[in-house]
Length: 637
Image (cartoon, helix red, strand yellow):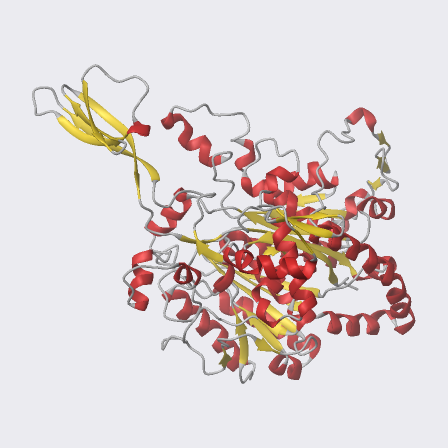
């Protein structure tokens, strides 16, 4: 009997804010929320981004020291919070879009006319070569005349051609919440996000260790392109050319599997299974598949799955722009016949399934806590849904490595088939929806809509509802599937499928005969959808689709397996777990929660272990690790 991987906790940080307790989802549908939920999420964003701080039952505004109640604070900061979240023009905290640095090469030869160029004064070298003549032009610029033979590489700046991105809330600095020790941004985000997910469970992790053998826990997390800011691979590759010193941390902390390594070493002390799969935009779902397989096979009882990508850097954006993948400012202006872009236009840069011109870069870190269904019932864990399976297929032969192919038809078709088998064809046809990859490129709107539409035809789905949260968050690369998942879990709490609100109209070339592509938020009711299919069409032919079941459906399935008596006992135990989880939520709303980070904590060496032929015992762990493994080759013995 395969264990069902149930979702008992989730958390993270994205341009919409904190993901746990549906706060990130709530930001997407803010205008649809009841007053209490709206105030909670606005307050959470205010404390998260440093606009306000909790002060003995009230909230103090950072800029003027005024005290507010929660409802008064929400009204006072709502506009600023909304301006500082989701997709927007790139803020100087990330980089200056008007002065993106680059090196300009030039050559002067002896006997020819002197080479002349202009430099901003701040770009002048500290030591001026003898064959340079400087002329102050005023306004912070100097003309340089080079007389004689030399090769030159000098710094300059230019205006970025892409100026929109989905950035974390302005003012939120994860590295200041713990001893970050020069960690790259993606790893700072991972520490925060994994901590948020673990604490959302409402069960102390140390108590879980007493219940489980150490090798019954697993972590699967990574990102698609590594840490490419200055503290990771980005600095490693460019510092020598800039005359800066390479540090001992840039190489190791740049690896793409490092989010899992950090969680093992500094949050969990995990000695169980670990791994980090890479699959471009499908990376999160690849790791989710590893987690599902580990629980379903019985090898693990508790799994943390996640990803963390921080690609809002000028170098990465320029790389994707050079591929023709990103929405450039000039293209956005042409779409709407504008002379220039205002702030509201940057917010509408990503338009899934509409007339669009490229995707918008985003950053995010998302984590999911999965348990086997028997452990979740035993502990009274709150069940937010279940992951029935994740399907992965490649594209086959390709002309261009970046072009879409046929693999996504197989992954989505298998996911739909499983939902139909588990929940019935009527549930699939009437009460499922798709969280699309939805990148906002002209190519994706055609190819992905064809995949979804043809699958809907095959399974006789008359009007399959399709959402695409990149419209709000941008494309966080390998973590995009996590963004899609947290935005779907919220549907089963608040009953609203986020609409394609940045898309003015569905493009004529979109295949939509059997699709419902809502341009506004769609109210379904908390129990109106039984399942969601999370879809990813990744660069290079990496396709994945996950079948995720609603909590009310998951309870029905578990009742069939375990009986009503067991479920009643679980609901009773769940009350205390919910109280503990909500205590963390309130602490986080008030800005008082801090990430878990255990540096140099309970470090073990081989001499600390008790080793026998049957088991290894670790200090601090109640259960041993059994060395008695199942021999799968008994027929060969």
